Length: 384
Ligand SMILES: Cc1ncc(COP(=O)(O)O)c(C=O)c1O
Image (cartoon, rainbow, N blue to C red; front, side, top):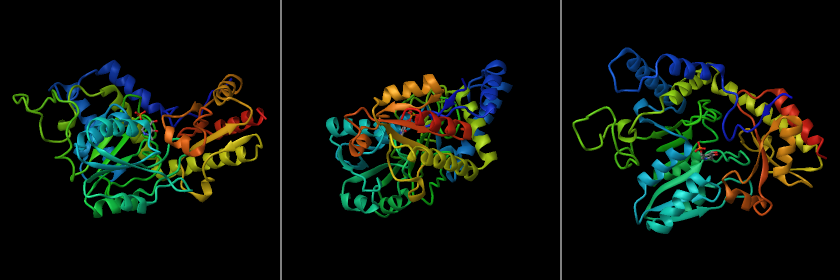
């Protein structure tokens, strides 16, 4: 039975073949650490890492590649951004629709570090109205943390308008781009983003264990590292270097992962983001149209044509526990989605799916095929 992987919102699969080739080539023939040796392989690794930084900077419109920090996943970058900025007495504006990787560090700061947090609720179209951000502003507001695309229903937030409001008030704007990087255009300058966190293993097509944090000029001095240690630079000093990226990159990097991420970003650049985006939107529409015709399926969120969304669809199959439905889809049809709360309890509270255990989520990626989405529609049809 062919495998139809539709869990790209968790991590992308398949990756472009060049990703595995690059990782294998590195592990078999190099294995050198980055920035810690003068021999040929170490220099070559340093070159690949800087190329990867540059590709990411290009993708996000970041002026200087040194502002791209390698992290180990999206959560790691979000923790660095949140815990590295917030001080007791600060006020933070965020939404109840954030992923647990934003909700949990903020809840911890609120409960144990004297950080004041305002939790905004989305409107009827599941978007945060930028005016809500303006209305929640206080004199101590330091940080606004909002996701770009939601991981349960894919809705895109108006980050450009929110960014404008934050910049006018001289706050810091953190965007969680876990579900949008590599799928939707992002420009840190025009969207007034100070901190942008994303995994390398979803839309950027790198291996698991990779992530990025863009650190803007306005915040690089005040942002504190989470990890201190060896950087391969200023080794005579027992103080952490102030320069980027070393300030935030202590210890050996995940070089096998970054080499793969470099290949993923190269593939994305060659394809062109707008082409990848359009393909995913067409696949999303096929899924949506196919599922809308099934009377036993409840779809969540607005139709793709009416609102900006990424290729994520959440649904409920009536008469089934959604975990059972996911198991049947996999075992009988090779269709692989994910049922549950997707680390986003606030979303399910709003959708009314919290007490029933969440939704069944199917999500497309850059290498998903028309056959994959058609197999999903056929499989769900047979559960009626
Ligand atoms: C919206 C959102 N934020 C953050 C994350 C965390 O990313 P990672 O799994 O790479 O830590 C995810 C992952 O699913 C996500 O969907």
